[in-house]
Amino acid sequence: GESVGLHLPTLSVQEGDNSIINCAYSNSASDYFIWYKQESGKGPQFIIDIRSNMDKRQGQRVTVLLNKTVKHLSLQIAATQPGDSAVYFCAENQKSGYSTLTFGKGTMLLVSP
Amino acid sequence: KAGVTQTPRYLIKTRGQQVTLSCSPISGHRSVSWYQQTPGQGLQFLFEYFSETQRNKGNFPGRFSGRQFSNSRSEMNVSTLELGDSALYLCASSLSQGAYGYTFGSGTRLTVV
Image 1 (cartoon, helix red, strand yellow):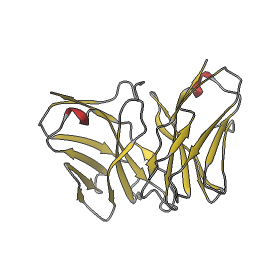
Image 2: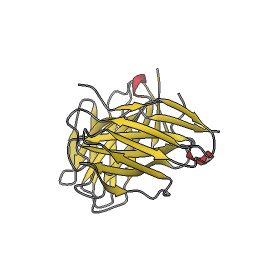
Image 3: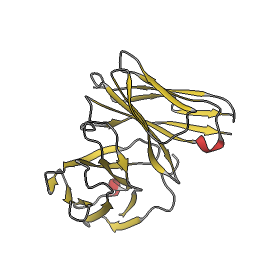
Image 4: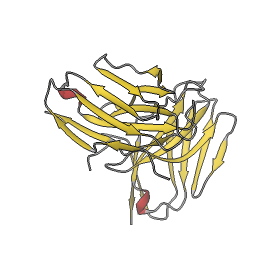
């Protein structure tokens, strides 16, 4: 499939390492945030979400942290695997009640065996 | 449970032509949104539909239009195609108004030659 992005920030890690992907969001009024994973030739796949009234949320091997003071989101992936290699996007819902997301530029995660 | 279905998966058109893309949301989902993804601009919001009404529109020229049918299926149309319209067009659906539970399809890859 074709690349989803050129000249994206890239994070290269070894299998088994923990990965942290960061994202700055734009609107202090955004009330809902989502992390997506996108593999080449596919649509974005939901990983984890968090509402603005929370600071942290954990899933299976993934944790999202939200710092509203500095408008910053991070995605932590524990024990990264080669199958985690993909482009990761954060998205914010700027208009509550609307199904409209504003996406970050994305980070490419490369996991070496 | 079937996911979001987009057809066709790939499309090649000539400049000046028009194109119609289709999106069938997850059964029961009433909100459908469209995004354009390019390597340079990333994911950009096109439109949002709920109950056959356009609720929100992104910053795209009038050549881009869409509609939603009573069964929640949606179509988008691009008229007078330009080379710069080459992109992956993604559709996402959610149960109701708001981005919670947003699920993307695999997209339609449009190439304009």
